[in-house]
Image (tube, rainbow, N blue to C red; front, top):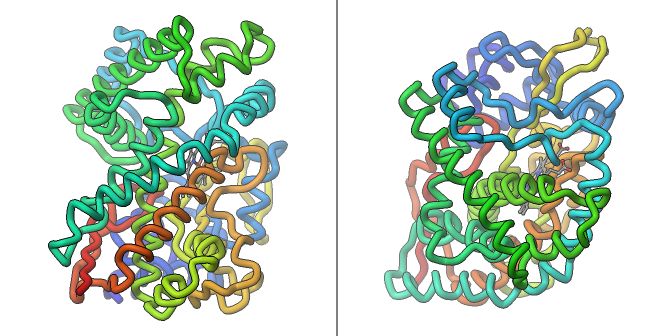
Length: 414
Ligand code: HEM
């Protein structure tokens, strides 16, 4: 363990989680849970909440905690950037993850009708094909960086297929999405904020255009399904709702899954007997995916705002305070999960994790994310059963507060 992380107060390191290795992060979480389960992070002005029960309380109690701040930039935007976005008519409004108005229930219920298991299932041949195409490209090299050469792009391509975005636009949209991530969760300079804001405004315009095209000519995709559910009735879904859902799914749907795919493969290859088990018996894969989500979630922290004065684990938190729920810490809480530090793909209650959040904002894309991860592992285990980690690699994490995943993941096979 890095000496800094060892010596400092357990919670201070939680202001900058992406600077820690997986082992360091888990060790900080362990100490936080036992010494100081709820603590103030002065650097970033958030309360850190680290136990399973407190996290569920914060995420699940909408009377006392609000999700309105979940997508606010961690570092405020410069006035020049706000002015620029205004001039570009950039006007998305809270619709799902940061929507605390009453219409959240209506929008979510109707989006869920379109975002159905049937729609996900239709993606199966495409997802399998993407994994196999990637393997075909590097199989003879006997070595690959599975992040760069496969899982960086895979969830984005799946999402674009779901949204009906033409393949020719994929690269530019992926670039716009990266900019959105930097703006919301990174620490960009004014210059970088302006570049990212330009991309964001371009993407907003693109979404408006895309939905308009589907109004004129419906296709076999999610925006067309949403328009069909709406059936011209604003009390079901407005066009503005649909524009915002399409815009919002972009960030929600691929960075999380890219990182989770890297984390899942890493966990399995670090515990290679588990990898061998799923190669021998692919029926174990669905439970394995749950254990991967529990053991090393890609969303490290999720936010809420205290609406009233509250007490958590005996600590007083005043109304208006900002809170970070450290989901992976809750997932290993020793009072709830037996032997939580162990990776066990046979764990009977593996699904009892909070990696997709909890309560009314529970991840809408969880069925799709689970399905993608299952198909990815099935194809990888079938095509490359001898997969193993390249030794002595640095495993640099992605540089985004709140998210976790390896930037590169080098594997080899014979
Ligand atoms: C492994 C991958 C994923 C992880 C770990 C993840 C995690 C999360 C988390 C922690 C939340 C917040 C829940 C809360 O506030 O209680 C969330 C919300 C959400 N996620 Fe995911 N997510 C993943 C994949 C996806 C995908 C693939 C999509 C869509 C294609 C998606 C769409 C959403 C949406 C729309 C919400 C907001 C739901 C609402 O507020 O009603 N997510 N996700």
